[in-house]
Length: 472
Image 1 (cartoon, rainbow, N blue to C red):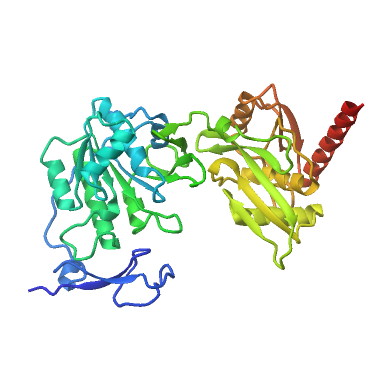
Image 2: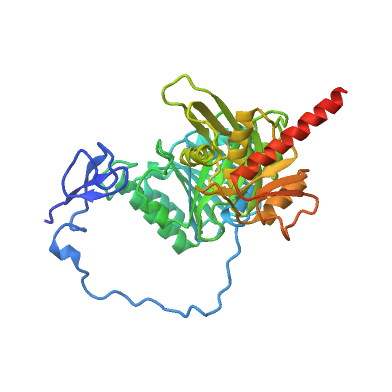
């Protein structure tokens, strides 16, 4: 009888070792290595298992230049969801959707699958965390009780795939969640690296073989990454994160990876009593409660995927009573803020060493592109000097370590979005306003941060003059 092999697997990164250790050498995490049993006679069971025996069957090879009809996508009708997926679900694809607990992943997918089922598609929703009665309760609360979605509550992977294969293959299947699935040929508990990897592999194989769109729901770690081995993200065709702050009603659906559409595309939803509602114009929503007469506020014209989005960046500086001033950032990279502060102090002579700095992107949106540098710098200068920025002005540009302002991509889309929302001015990198769209916008081009400070000083002088004229 073949001896059953035992390996030690890191539950954080999936690294495999031959012995236990307190700290994983691959990812550096402590107390994450767990002993797991391998299949008898499988990989690692002995020298004979390391070589393939016999000849495999021949596979069909075709020319890449051959013609093939692209299968139609399954359009759910939930516009923001379809936008992020690239225009709808592709038959035979596998999607991985992750997000914080309670953010609304199950609600979003239930709404999307109900909309897809109402269009005549066959949809199966498998829940490993809730009973069927609980899923029906949520559907009634969302007004989806009459949708022809077939429900199931099971965690045994063999039973799930056997049920799906024993009938006509559905158009779409939701597995909520992949961490609750378990394969009976593995001794490890559900949620471990081995179980998640094996379950995801079987479900992806089922999707490709049956031409069914499979959506896997994944839990996230405290760092915000999808729990389990990173190889799962390589297996699937698309990785989508559902983001949002609990204090805000806005939710952001962001595509991190997509083989069938643009990556970094976002969809915006608003959480309400009847579930998630689409926000077709997120710029107007993010700027809806903006107070234009307050210092430390700047409007940034950004690009998320293919969509231009205008958001408000808020900055506050205050004299620090601590030995090390505080730097608090919400919605932006803290390292990027430190760089902008250093450039302002070294190149522009602004004293920030003794100041607490607070930076916030209003609305709960997280910005990743460096084009926000100039907006952040303008908000910081406005807060330090107490001078409000023009309320009808958008700002964007990348800052280098020398203090120069560099052009950014897709300027036409940014300017068109600003003009559509009623903005009349734009502060942008030097030379970027030539031959640009937006005839109704007045461009103020700057080449470095000194030019930005001079521009804001001129605006303050004009504002002071208007206030004096008004008093007279």
